[in-house]
Amino acid sequence: MSADDQQFWDLLSSVPNHVRQYSGDVADYIDKAVDRAAENVRDTLASTPWIPDYARPKTFSPPPVPAASVSTWESMQNWVARHKLVTGLVVCVVGYATYRTVRYSKLIRKPRRARRARNGGRLEVVVIAGSPSLPLTRSLALDLERRGFIVYVVCNTIEDEMMVQSLSRPDIRGLSIDITDPPNAGASLERFAAYLQAPHAPVPRAKPNYLTLTSVILIPSLHYQTSPIATIPPSSFADLFNTHLLQPILTIQAFLPLLTSRLAPPSLPTPPSTQGPNSSSSSSSSHNNSSEKATHKTPKVLVFTPSIISSINPPFHAPEATVCSALSAFTEVLTAELRPLQIPVTHFQLGTFDFTGFVPARGLHGPGMLPPSAMTQQWPEAARLAYARNYESQSGSAISAGRIRGLRGSSLRDLHHTVFDVLDGSEKSDAVRVGLGAGLYGFVGRWVPRGLVAWMMGIRRVDELSTWESSSYGGNGTSTSASTSTSGSEKSGSEASEGHEYIAVGRGFEGGANVWKEE
Image (cartoon, rainbow, N blue to C red):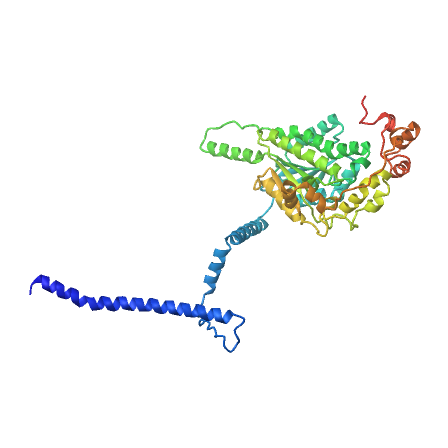
C-alpha cells in the first residue's frame, strides 16, 4: 500500500470522530436554547396575574452558593481598599498624635535647671519687665527662681517693690526703673550693668562669680476693657495706649543698650611669665580660670501677648485687638533689627491658663466688673439701642473677655517649660503659641470667614436705630461742656447720657490736657 492510500484511509477514519464532535456541540447548543426558552416561558407565566394559582408554574431558585470564609486580616484589607481617603486621614491623625505624645513625654522628663558655678552659686540673671501684681509675672518669677535663676522684676513704684518683697525669696529682687524719666532710667541701667560686671560670692569666703544676663522678658498688662468703640472716651484710649502699649515699648527701648553690648568682666592682670617646667601648665590653668569667669551667653528677648482676641478681632474688643496687634508688629520689627546682632527675639502668643493659687476666687465677671446687662444701662440711649443686644450676646459666648468659657485653661507648667526651653536654646522658633485656645483660634482667625465667626458669637443684624438729634453734638454749648468735663467717671457719664446720645469732646476737655486736641 502506497503512502497516498494510507493518507486517504486516515482521513476516512477521522470522519466519524468529527461527526460525533459536531453533533454533540449542536445538541448542547439546542439544549441550552430550549432550557433558556423554557425558563423565559416559565417566568413569564409565573408573573402573569390573570393565570390562576393552580395553573401557574412554580419558579425554582438556584441553590445558594456557599460563601467562602474570609479572615479578619482579609476583611481589614478589603475595608482599607474601599475607604482609602478615610484610611489616609486616620493614619495622619494617629501619626500626629503619636508624635506629639512622644515629644511631650520627652519634654516632661527633660531636666530643667539653670547653670551654676562649681561652688553652687547662681550665674544666670533674668529680668522680667512686668507688673508684680499680674499673676503671670509672679508665677513665672517663682518658677525661674526655683530653677536656679536670679530674677529681677522691673518696679516702677514703691508698691511694686513691696509686692516683690512680699514673695519672700532672696533671689527674686526688684529693679527700680522709672521709664517715664529717661535720665533716671539710664542711671538705673548703668548701675545694673555695673552690678553684672562685678564678682559676687554666693556665701562668705567663697570664690566670687560673675553673673550673666540671660534674658529680658516683657509681660504687658493682660486686662482690657470690652465696650463698643462709640462708648469709649478718648481719654480712655489715651490711657490705654500709654499704659499697655507705650510703656512696654519704652521698656524694651531702655534695655536695648544693655542687650546690644557684651557685658564681660574686667580683664584680670596677667602674671609675668616665668621660665621653668611648670610655666606652660600655670598659664593654661590661669586661662581656664579666666574663661570660666567670662563664660557668657547671648541674651534673649521674650515678648508675651494675648492671642485669642487679636487672632479673630471680634466686636467690642477694640482696645485689646489694637494693642496686641501693635505689639505683634513691634515684635516683628524688633526681631528683624536684632537678628543681625544674633540676639534672638521670641514672641509668646498666649492662650488661657489656670491661675488657681495666684488669684482669689472670683465670679464670672471678675472683681470690679459689672455684668453686661448692667453695663449697658450706663450707655447713652442711642448706643444702647445700637449695640446692647449684640454686646450681651457676645459677652455670653464661649470666648467672652478672652477666655474660653467652661474650661479652666492650660496648666502654668506648660508655659514655664516652654520659657525655659527658649532660654536654653532648645526652642528656636520666632513665635510660640502656648495655652488653651492659642493654636485653635490662630487657625480660626487665619482660615474661617469673619462673618461666620461673628455669627457664632451671637452677633446679629440690628434693624432698629435711633433718630439723629443735632443737639447731641453741641447744639447747647453749656450742656456739652458740662457733660464732657466729667466724662472720666461712670456716674457723670450716665448723667450726661440723659441729654446726649454719644460722648462729645469739648475744647476745654480736662483743662486743656486732651491729647486729641491739636495745639
